[in-house]
Length: 433
Ligand code: SF4
Image (cartoon, rainbow, N blue to C red; front, side, top):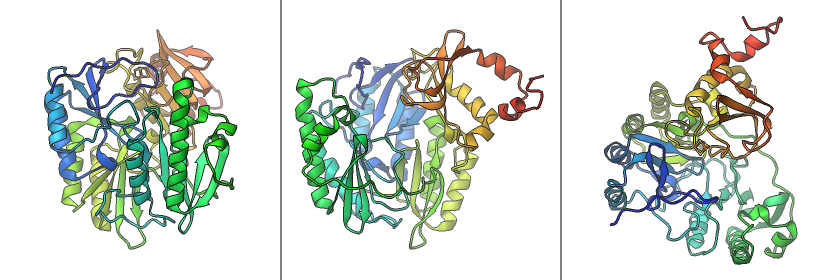
């Protein structure tokens, strides 16, 4: 296998295993494990490859993919050969999406692996498998195109960004959610699959003449309606947002334990020990989550609690109330050549200092530059790395107008470690000492 050249950073482009991306700390190689699932030995094997061929840093993305950092050009062919040999990746040919379909991180989508019952109305794993298989044959979809298949049970995926949603709304019935708040159906799962594929085909066919159509949401409601021959329906009833970490108990008492990596990144040694903990607990499946973590599926309750305790010892997020879940941060310096700041280190300090505000629902995005890789959308507070500090955007995205430039280091230096910014600013005098 010949070495790949790192591809350029043109808009909408996504790195993959065969097409790495050049960054400040070497090549970034993105892995798309089939169905976002790994066995514990597979996870352990990936950590060994990350240490052997890269700098040992591993990331989990919001699309449930893995990233190995610091890979050298010389090591890349051997890394790819090892990944393919161990069946750790399943690269789709061409420029289409490497992971088109996202499902509940509590599901095991692989054939022959029974899932846990969290109250889904339809077999979301089977629907996702069929959609992903058919989607691979579709040419012309943009790389970032994403479809959420949500069985309609306890794991509501409303917060996971997608172009199209297939949501179980009643036993054996699925509604299709399109951009602009349009809903169609409900349909039997096979009819919903047919309708979804017709829509995707129609979208792909429009794109060669209309390059501005990067996502399904760029189509007008009239365009979308013309591509789906199904009656409109009401949006599904809202469900509570699910926990992003912690213990989950299925209808039969079996459990899943979900953890998240702080800001989506950790060292290979941490993930190796997590894989060993999963194996020791008898787990067969580790599932990558859209909250940049892993769920360990199908455990006895005691084993799930042990797994969570071990993950906490490793510094991982094990509870939904962890303030780090409220903060998005990109790789920043020194990992990214474009970064103006060490965004991940600053995010860790801010998560501690702003814990009460984050617990109250504040969303914070710390970005190393205006590109906003970690979270292109708006947040309550967005800090954008800039010369001499951070530009502050309130209620907007990294590219929106900044209100002020902050000297974050000077602000943090005036706060005692362990004291949070909220309580300091909320003092009656309003003055910092
Ligand atoms: S947002 Fe962060 S990771 Fe993305 S290019 Fe900018 S500094 Fe690099």
